[in-house]
Amino acid sequence: MADPIAIAGTIILDPGELELTFVRSSGPGGQNVNKVATAVQLRFDVGNSPSLPAGIKPRLKRLAGSRMTTDGALVIFADTHRSQKRNREEAIARLVELIRAAATLPKPRRATKPTLASKVRRREAKSHRSTVKSQRRTPPPAD
Image (cartoon, helix red, strand yellow):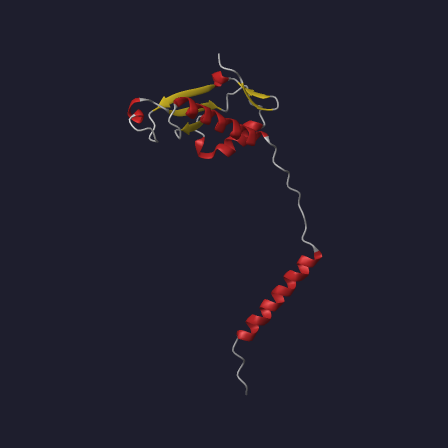
């Protein structure tokens, strides 16, 4: 049995939730590429995971973007290393980083108003621009 994966705080992933499949890699490896399936495709069902709190799931889906499938599974593909073990570790590390990013709460936006000085600068810039444009016009014909 594999050890549980600690993410952040109280979030701990059960390795049984991860579905790892190995495929042939297109990366470096020489003759090894033709013989051994070293690339890793990690699938993690975000929607049905009991390990993730409900608040993290929508943020994780938003962060994952195109890596999310229509059925709610997160797919991570790792093939940068020559060995299956290192690719597996990299895929799990990328999943952990993604979940950690989703676990951090976004900073709440506070509505602000423009300062008086910025309003004055805006009005001065507008009037200056108006003056420049009015000076470009052809003068009215003199009678």
